[in-house]
Image 1 (cartoon, rainbow, N blue to C red):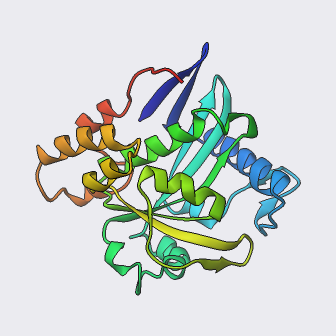
Image 2: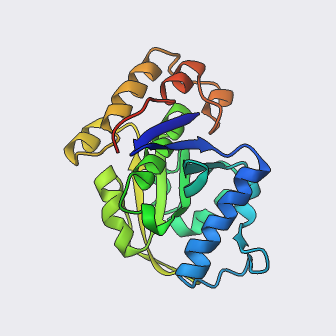
Length: 239
């Protein structure tokens, strides 16, 4: 799956990581943003090689990259909450036996959002979020959880995420705000003016044309219906 947006003469393109080189580029960008720029003391950071990964990078995630030309300038990770390792890490964060329980069915978690500084006011971040929405919806996800620092909460709200519980304390980052996006809630997406609305209308209409209970093969993140996969490739648009 690949999405593309024009940024001047050079296109921004997004895709799901498939190779070791893709993941190496992700690990380097995360290190630059989280460790070097923000000074967060993540214990799994590899300072010698200036990379940062964690155990959930091995838990069958979908890791999205955005590149400007040949340079990776953005990344975000999506993990399915039905994976035992993912649920062990994020279950307590999102209170999946308490306040978060109503949203835990067919749910994913987006994390490790990192965008190079010079691209934060452009379309790279928007393309990352657009790609995870289309990728998750096409893969059968109903809810997407996010835990973010307060400055990012406004961004997530503008896309349709809603806080459902109070903040949680992270040992490295500090206070995080917990929110959830209902991917199928078109009425709410329209009410907040979410950029996801066009994709939601298009992909939900395709989903309605297929069997109402997709197989586990189609529900797993990253294994999307062929018809949907063609659509989320998208075309070029103005930045």
